[in-house]
Length: 123
Image (cartoon, rainbow, N blue to C red; front, side, top):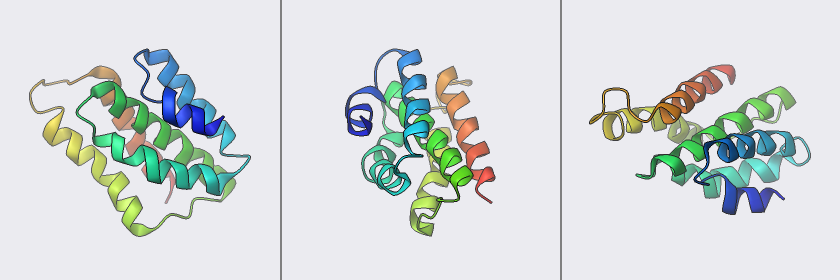
């Protein structure tokens, strides 16, 4: 189920499907935290800086929701290199996606704010 969500649904064209996918991944991470964490870092993290705003939105929401779930479980143990890559997503988006349009794609902006909140929750 996790593989299906990561391969086909996190970058789906419909906003509600992407939102539900990120929530489902967070709930499924409780069953096997290490597997979901590694899958997200390997397969989803690179899509967070995608030029396609729908793909970037789905990746950021998925990463954020799973981060919060892992913190709640006490299983948030990722390398400092990966955490730095996650933190740099907001900087990249500001420079590339939000540069041309003052407010950018609103769902992507909201997902970025949630990512910042999720990063703060890991402290």
